[in-house]
Length: 328
Image (cartoon, rainbow, N blue to C red; front, side, top):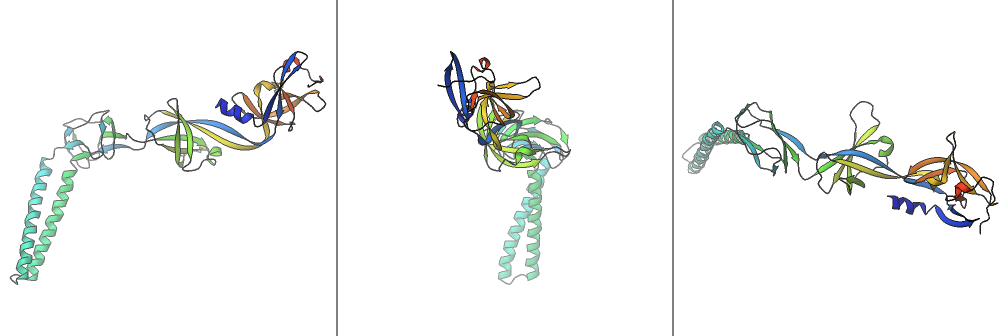
């Protein structure tokens, strides 16, 4: 960042070095600018893209829990099972009735084609087959509900109950976190969010590494009159959930001024900032300035400075206001 700032400053300042009465003066030639860039850091937290507390939809007795805290799991993997003996028996019975109804229907269709049965008999067989199919599908779902399935790839964050527990439907058994994707949740003042664009790339610092994230959406903060909005960013890489992500937001701001090293500034007891310059008559003058923004070892200032003004840096402590400087 410091190198970036220095490169940017050279666009507005040209360094000149003069030897005046055995005193080395560093003098900067000013070039005024109409805008400047600022950098703001906004910390936030990395959260898994998906996080879910899983529960059985039906009551029952937990027969087995196949995972524990910290285990990695795949989408579709069976995480836990209820005692399924009753559900399995009901499913087997329903399947047998369904299979039989299909055989009867096929036989009735053949008999009807030969004119041996009435249309009403065939309709009754159709109805029996539909009822048997509906019951089979119902008990198939009930049986599937005895198994707790991972909805996505992830790892087990929490396990709330053990094998043998008798539960009601909807009681959390396991908590699973996404193991492939994380999102950064950053609270940003509204005054900065109008500079953000959905889908654009932004720089982050995570675990001492600089990475790029993409703005997914902006959301209101929780009620309470907050002047911030919640910015949610995606990443192409995975990081540990719970880690701190620092958004480094660079923006261009409008404002007439120039960059000067902080060492060129002086402050009075009244808090007024000033800078020493050499005017066209080669006289040292003290110009009052307003500091608009600090970054690193530089400040963006405005005041009475003009293009071509010479700002004194090194050796300024040996120069007094009103002194005539002979630049050669």
